[in-house]
Every structure is written in structure tokens, then in C-alpha cells.
View (cartoon, rainbow, N blue to C red):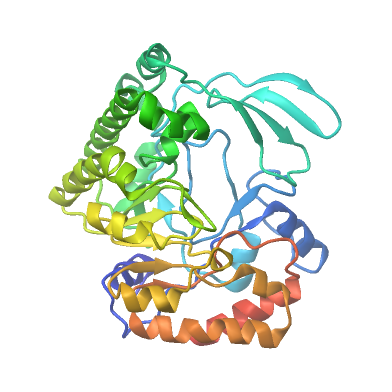
Length: 389
């Protein structure tokens, strides 16, 4: 079986086949360390990265054209371990287009304040050692939203939202060995609105401007449905991905009541549309402790989730017992990979059981951090290969 065929069988809980040999991704500082410690730099990265920038592994869907800046893609780790083919997102920008002009406001040796290409004013730390500090967002009121959707979130620009060589991509997709998915970051009805109005404003607007939030969510839902309909007339799709970073270590950032009022109607509408088009696998990327969110996402039609961060309290074996048909990706504690070999061995015990139960893709529970040595990572991946194969 090729990677696409294995992917679909695993999603269908066929436990008689091997699972996929994938990794989620790495921080830029991690790859820089590994190159210093013996990883051969043959292909290099698809772009230069800072210490704290993310780098895609084969299990993290790419390319993600909707982000403010392209995300780097690894090839050297992939080729060293002979990973399976990459999970690939259909190459169309389903977010802000045309992008805003990036403008630097001020900078010094350690940080830069700027307006980014998503229209967000923020402070970026040059060494990437910390998340950006977000200051201002493109939508502050109803008028801002009307202008933004008219100028940068409409389908009159659809032909320019594709990659330039889209006809070649369509041809390659017909005989592909890789899994092809739709949507991905930042498609969802919390995370996307957070990019537009800001996290604190979003929490306030649920109460002060509920009609604005519903208007934005309704429009985005229609917008993404139209994009999906266009793509599905030209190619088949294996899976649909959504993105909702909406939890912390203590659980969801919003209540079930808010979820059901401001997210559920739009998720049901887009997932029902896609089901009617023959799709049946819908996976959401959501960090933090997801115990409160799993039943809410299942209610709207979601079938899978990742990456199940262990440090946030997620236990994939306990979650599997409670939700035996939830497709699961990740759940291996990335922090344990920096410790001794026995600790790594102990962490991988649960993987054997998860693979037996089916519907599981093993990899680290987020980007592998720079405190993981190349020797440790090689040990972990080789032990994982023994389990997979």
C-alpha cells in the first residue's frame, strides 16, 4: 500500500496494517542543533528559520498558503529516516488575500514591531525565543469587517489564490501516493476570529457584539464552502482539517454554551456540506487540554483530533478508552525525548497498545524542541520504527 492508501485504512480503524511512519515537526533551533550534531545538510530547509520558528514534518499538513509567512519544510530528517510521503494540503489560500503590505514600525537588536501581512500589529522577538506579542487587529468593529471581507475575503480573487502551477498539481493529484486534504490552518470558528479581532476582544464580543461574531462566522462558513465546492469539482480529497487552538493546560478557553452558540451551527453546516460531497473524515488541530472539547467536536461531526499534548494533561490511552472511534494523531510526550533511553522506552509503551486499537498515527505531541539531541531523536525514531513495522 502507498501512503494515501494506508492513511485511509488507518482512518477507517483497520488495525491489521501498519500505521504511518510520520513526525509532526520541529522548532528551527532543533534542526540547527541537529545539523551541528551530525544530521547531514543535504537539502536544507525550504526557507531560513529562526530558533523559534516551526518546521513541518511529514505528518503536519503543508503547504499552508493561508499563513502570514510560508512555513518551512524539512527534507533532511525525512530522508534520513525514510518517512512516508507527506500529508499535503490542497495548495490554495483560503484566508486573507491579497495580503496586507508588511510594514516595520520600529526595531532594535532584539525585536521588531510591525504590521504583518495578515493586518496584525505585533512585536516579534528576533531570536524566536518567545511567541510574538500581539497588539492590534484588523477588525475592531462592523465597518472594519465589511471592508476586510469586500477587499480580502472574497471569491473574485479565487484564480489568484491557487499556486501558480495549479494545473500541474491537479495532474499529479490524480495518481498521487500522498494523502491530500482540504482546508487546515486557520479554518475554524474560534481561531480564525481570534486572528481578526484578537483573543481578548473575541471574549468580550461574545457578549457585547454577538451579532458581529455570528456575521463573521456565517460569512466565513459560506466562503469556505464555496472554495471547497470549487476544488471538489476538480479533484478528490482524502480528509478535511480544521484548526482551533482554544485550550490551555486547565481546559477550554470558552464554555460549552459559547461553543454551541458561536461555533456549532457553522461547523455543522460546513461538515454536512462536505459529507454530502462524499467526505467522511474531519480532523481538528487543537492544543492544550482537550477533555472538555472532544464531546463538543464530536457533536458537530468531527472524527479526529491532534496533537494531544501530554504536558497539558492528555492521556491518549484514557482518551481512547472513552472515545474508541476517535481518530488520534500524536500524543507522544516531546519532553520525554530529551531524557534517557529508558524514559523514551517507557513513553513508547502506550504506542503499541494504541496501534492495536486502530485509528492512530504516532508522533510527538507538537514540534520537537531544541533540548532533544540528535542522538536521542534517532534512538526514539528507530525504536518507534520497530513498533510500527
